[in-house]
Image (cartoon, rainbow, N blue to C red; front, top):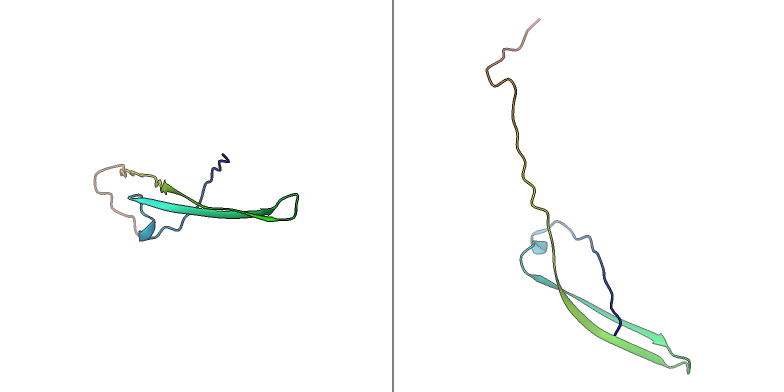
Length: 71
């Protein structure tokens, strides 16, 4: 049985959130040695979108008020 692996870049929109599965489908055809078209599929497979979870931290130094100099 043939197997294919894919990576995809998806748009950053609400419908492409990390929750829930999406479905990929594929069909293919080829000409065999007799010149006859052979159709494959459609085949489907579910996949999950993975998004990074990014945590940021901000700090300021010094932590006391600093007056800006005026000229």
